[in-house]
Amino acid sequence: MLNVLKDIAAKQVGRVLASDATLKVLTNPQFKSAMVKAINLRAEARDAVEKSVKEVASALELVTREDVAGLRRTIRDLQDNVAELRAELQEAHTHAETPAAAEAAAPARKPAARKSKAAS
Image (tube, rainbow, N blue to C red; front, side, top):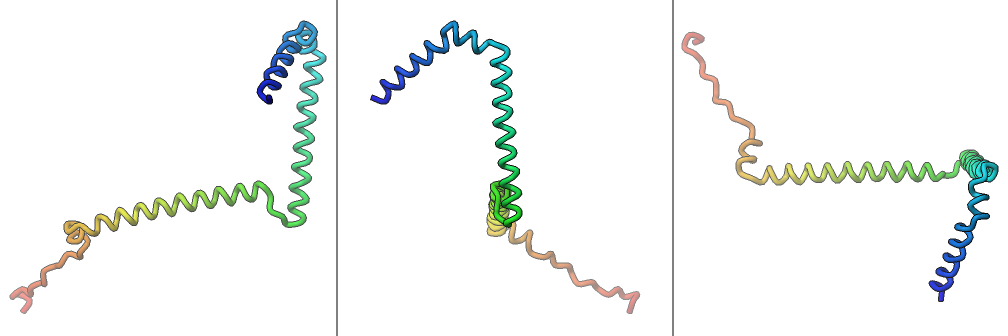
């Protein structure tokens, strides 16, 4: 039933948009100018409201969307860093378990220095 209504509405809108009267209005420079002004006015109103909300939030020491977004970015960055460190730790742990790696990690022993007879 809903799909039938949608189809009927879509056909009617298509007829209205395709009509000569609608095309004449849509191509009218005055109409275009009014639409641009309306769109700009809406954007300006939204910006003014957002600015006011930020000021109120700041005055009341409330968390803003931007604060939350910044925290999310920080958390995501920290999670990435933890994942990288875990991968490095796992890689180092894997290399340390091999016998060759254990020998390489062991400190090299220096032979004891012999005293020369000339020093005696």
